[in-house]
Length: 580
Image (cartoon, helix red, strand yellow):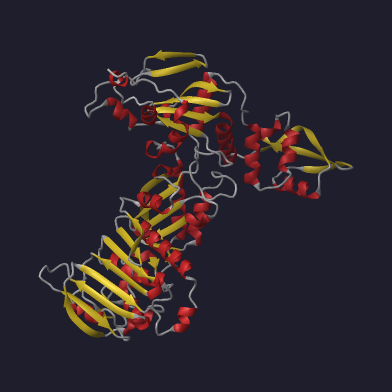
């Protein structure tokens, strides 16, 4: 498709929804930035002058020829589609051909551009009238790319100016917009200035994982895990899911404001997919906390209808159930423990002073709090020569959960587990709780009680709650009720009656499973043998969500050997440290 700008035919114009809505500073920047991205820009500079009602966006994209500049601000002119068939294969951020024309109608529009494909082409500066027609054209010295200046915004519409939100609110919305666009386009360098002073910058990255910490300052890159999956979508179209999520044991939010969905380079509102993400994090976060998750879908253009909202913020995505299933599968995969998502910088900073570093190439067996015996590496882990360099370095990049080895118990509460590249500390109660909870999720079974349990002083709401959970509850006398079955995990416990009373206090089936798992898990303060600890570790590491318990508490703490070595300054030269 050629890049020259042409007027759209009337049948295409009639199929396109209402024109661009220019109602704020953010709307101006959105339309200009999307044009810059479509032009292949890798660096975008946004200059704001709020008190002067002026915005300027400069980029290093392909630029425009003089012929393009003459047409670009007229109604329904675009280089991105030609016919009705093109509406079914939109691959650009803009396509309606209305943005620059709408800006010309509500502001003073000026565009300077130089065509990058012709090194000998001059730069041109064009000033437009309210109809989007060139009013003044002159040559200008400019680097390849485009600079669009929008001045006196809404100057001819004072009522609209007066109806805008306070300036601080507009600037906050504008900042959020730029951050969202940057998240969808991580390879772009962003510089934003306000009244000739730097406001904020966003440096480029290989993926959204490098961009998110620049936006949410409390979050570190080690708190996030990124996953890219190729997907065989309906109609044999190759698609992709990019997922960046905050690991639930490291970061979460007070509100679901960072559950974001993007499709083909644009952030969109998708209640179905957003709810799917929230559901996938169920029972991995503390109560009333929400995940940090960004899901970017690359979908065949024929599976998307962008023509539902002037700002393209709402779309119709075909095969929604298919994409919901794929997003859930991707989140489950990302939540598994693996060498790709084990950075422990945050944990090491907090607790690095508590553990003594082991010498290189030596493993330690902790038999008791007072006795430490150095041993040789276990069979199969000897340092054999490797063809690709340092064998220890190679082992570090082959971290496998099968290498977790229980070596001690601390305060009858924490299991110390040896790992190929450090030490893990696992709380025994909540690790077992996670095991039992997922076991109950897979097989929630009610069994008859040999002797019914008699409960007293139940309210009608409590009786109804037990019956909703499938328990057989019958009157047994005045203010007495007989419970004839119970969850299998509770049925043989001495405190089964107390557990049933707890279940009667409310909650859905999932809450009942959590309560059952919590009551059935081994308690902190219970001594365990090494074999019992190893069995617990082996079962825990194979769970679907091993990072947190069903209440959202982190289960393990990872201390990497590299961080321990830094803390104990093992790079020091011993002789020099003695003054020799």
